[in-house]
Amino acid sequence: MIPAIEVHDLTVAYREKPALWDVDLAVPTGSLMAIVGPNGAGKTTLLKSILGLIPAVAGNVFIHGEPFHSGRRRVAYVPQKSSVDWDFPTTVFDLVRMGTYGRLGWFRRPGAAERDATATALRRVGLGDLGDRQIGQLSGGQQQRAFLARALVQDADVYALDEPLQGVDAVTERAVMEILRDLRNAGKTIIAVHHDLHTVPAYFDSVTLLNVKVIASGKVGEAFTPENLKLAYGDAAR
Ligand SMILES: Nc1ncnc2c1ncn2[C@@H]1O[C@H](COP(=O)(O)OP(=O)(O)OP(=O)(O)O)[C@@H](O)[C@H]1O
Ligand SMILES: [Mg+2]
Image 1 (cartoon, rainbow, N blue to C red):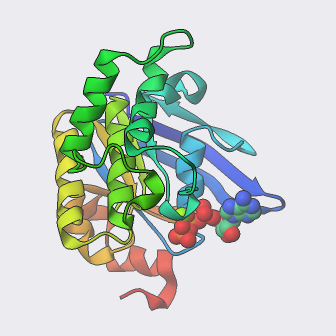
Image 2 (image 1 turned 180 degrees about the vertical axis):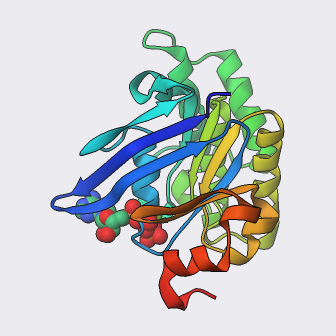
């Protein structure tokens, strides 16, 4: 089967210094994959490259076999929390409904179907009552849920999430993981940057260890070894 995401020989640099060096990666369709590595390892850069948001020095990305400029509409993205402007004046409902714009094309305005999909996604993430709030008035965990809802209404094939569990409480963490597992069980592919190494085996079926280069990638049982962790994190890894 064609992998959901294929990355070939990808090198990305900001100014001179490479953030990703010669990255090869295949994410099988239907995986729930963690991307782990130390701060500055290039995890966010990898997600943005997969989405075509930053230019590569070299290399290619394919989404379900298509070059990313045609395949990337099939990818939903939840950005890292710190990168979002929460003062942007918009309601939670409108933020989530923006996720439907990709499938509408240029000329159609969102209508009843998009409103329903938005309301359903808000309920699914437990924000059914908060649609009218300004996004800046949500708690951190609620903001993460709102971005997850926006990704859900995109009805994508691939979900790329940058630290979806950052700063959320145990209840939200369980709720988010349950949604990600449901997506996987529906045949979707999920890659999520994840910082808590202890929960990798419980939450994910596969893992990529990244530190500018790919250290290892595959099933958690094979790739998530103490040796590979040491290569990715240095001696600080426990
Ligand atoms: N816009 C930018 N301009 C210049 N350098 C950048 C830019 N964005 C990231 N970098 C650098 O590229 C490297 C990789 O950054 P990236 O954000 O991908 O790391 P990360 O693995 O997501 O880290 P974290 O765990 O802290 O989120 C870092 O050294 C970072 O300083
Ligand atoms: Mg990051």
